Image 1 (cartoon, rainbow, N blue to C red):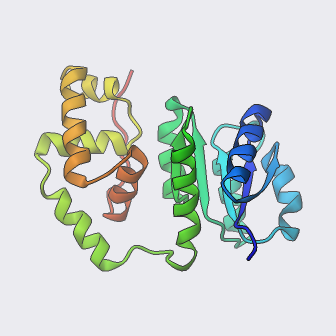
Image 2 (image 1 turned 180 degrees about the horizontal axis):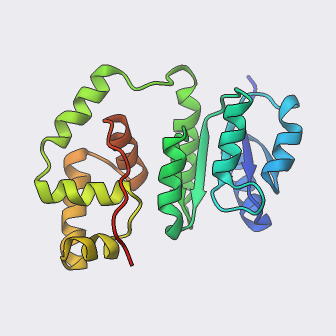
Amino acid sequence: MSKPNVFVVDDDHSVRDSLQLLLEASGYAVRSFSSGRDFLKELPSLPFGCLIVDVQMPELDGLGLQRRLAELEITLPVVVITAYGDVATAVGAMKAGAIDFVEKPFSREAIIASVQLALSQRSRPSVSDRTREVIEARLKLLSPREREVLDGLVAGQPNKVIAYNLTLSIRTIEIHRARVMDKMQAGSLSELVRFALAAGIEPISKHSF
């Protein structure tokens, strides 16, 4: 049985090398590329696989690469990797069809879980009505303040910005955030965002500093 394929696109060679070693040790066949353009050049000869792409890259960034794949009508499950300050962009990538995002620095467990999730979506591209109903039921458990915090998180805002917008302390936001994660039964921020997008929650623009 052939190994599942993973393609890593990142302009940072240290990230590419570490991901390749980690994924190969976990049983994946890996090819890495230093730019989105290099990946696109090889794309016609590549088999189906999971694409791991950095959000911020020169010339053609992760979101731009996603758009190019959509133009070519090529469907690959995408996982975006992002620095802490790029979470809003990562949410945008998920709106554009990415399966998951992982914040740097990431653990082996986090990246493997994201790859497994992405590859499992090949035969399940859409959220079922039942799944959406479950997520919407969990949303109803949130208090109005918790829903405001969720909206901020889906918009990619860090705790301090949400606290500023809601005129609350960062500690209070942390407490509300923990309650949101618990009520939504989300194990990570990316899972919480997936749930929110599946329920039709749109990332909204809020004031920040």
